[in-house]
Image (spheres, rainbow, N blue to C red):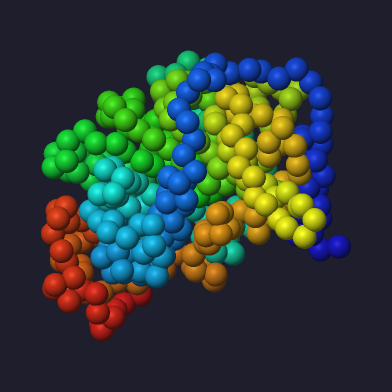
Length: 355
């Protein structure tokens, strides 16, 4: 058996053990009468979480990409941030139909997802979250948002949008690694930017901190839902150990689990809103996390980018008048809300270059 196959077999065995062992679980503080899950909003935000994977910056910035229609038609991107050094990408824009600022974070790219999933199993709680006693997170998840060019670009765009539109709702979304970043962003907006109305819906999110962190998060960002799908393996990682309740990772609430029910020749998808603990044993924890495919499609929407796993981006030189780049090649495209850039011919494919 090859080394990679042995690693995957060991991972699956340990995941099954962590899911099946019985012990006293640590409960987190939560409210059972909190915000109500909105299915329609989830099916809209998943399209934003899909679009942010695309590598053509011109089509994304002008919202003319193949994934930029349907339920997100009319959306206006005001800032697109690409951290090339860390293979991260996010955008901020205004959705008039939602009367909201929408922030979306890209997840792990292409074939690198297999290596990322393998690494997830071994991630340790190794960072105390600032200002929250006993709350611990993994520094990699934390740093992807806080210690890259992503955070300043996002906060700058939110500030500019609020100056124009006032204190409207902020909706944050993402898939996979992007879901983890979305949660840290939402908490940052509430704690450090004093945003009043922040709503989160993520897809295929891994665990990002311990139970103490999850408790703080649920109090500060109560309008938050994690959608999980079938046997998607990423929400099972990093593992949750019943027998180490003070030291183990613990999901932030509240989970919404999608699963299929077979009735004779028909297949129905059920959306189960789980309890407020973050670790409802009757939801995705009731099955093994064995599927990558279930991680890559939510509500029938594809959540992946370049199949080659590349972090490359495609730009048009004419759109670079809206952009700035630092010496590391990290890019920010920014414009004033309400200003069309299609009239300048930036939507043309002529003269594109790959970075």
